[in-house]
Length: 347
Ligand code: TLP
Image 1 (cartoon, helix red, strand yellow):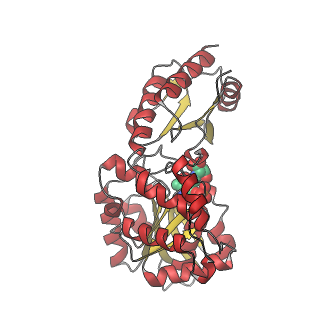
Image 2 (cartoon, rainbow, N blue to C red):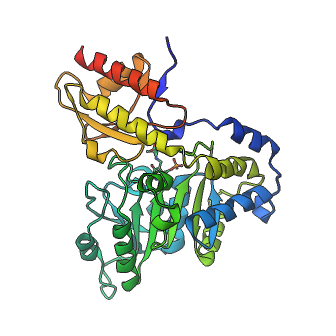
Image 3 (cartoon, rainbow, N blue to C red):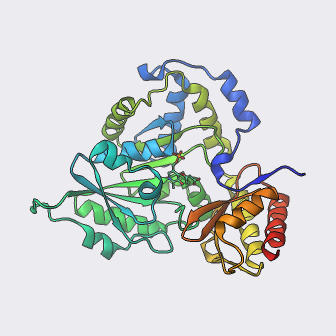
């Protein structure tokens, strides 16, 4: 049987040979003392890349988002997030559990935007002692549960201006920021300029084995660094991981375009299969979300049957299935994936 095609996520990517070599040879030190030269180099490169004064290397995107919320907000404050956001659905309620920060939600449009009027309506009255204090707005770009759609730069600018006039902070969950940047043909910094902080992942399509970056103002990153220690995320000779992160930023960004081409190839193939419904307009980066229009298959049964044929995809709730292209997946794998789905769905 040919090797399994794993489209569950771009988190399954393995480090490139250049990453493994860089990891083996990285100069190291104790990062908790600020003495790991490779971590310091990565943090500087990352800050420059997203146009922020400072950056922090963290073990995961989840920790990066958590540190951002905790560094922007205090106990009793509210962070406003989209009702389809990763922070709300997949981060174990961390801001509330660990920081006493309430998460307030607004509806997410199909294009990943939180409508301005909904944000305005969600703001609390700071004089009313019944209410939490509105402190932070979080956006997501690209937007995972909306199928990897990319936020319009003009929209991000609008939210930045809205927040500034109301004294609110802004944070971007940019786990796949570089997918968005490549799709738009813009530098990543253009997507973060209007927002106070950004988290992006090195360990998804950029293929580093571990790690994410949180970037923002120096005082914000200083608070986040203390919080990272508090959470047990001070990683000592972390340069062995940061070395792969440097390769990710320097050499793996441009190739994301291949993942986007492959995602569109996959989407167009799935689109032709009777019983499968998907919106081709939502396929803008590396994620393809689809639903089933047949009573013969439940998402769980289909996922299981595909796995038996060597194709792994994910279920994301409400009848939706997700496939993600990434480093290590070639056009031929996508063609085989479509053929497997076609064969299984018609049985
Ligand atoms: N997303 C993972 C799962 O958690 C769902 C995936 O397979 O897509 N923000 C966004 C938008 C993400 O998609 C993810 C990971 C994270 C944050 C968290 O990153 P990690 O997994 O490094 O904690």
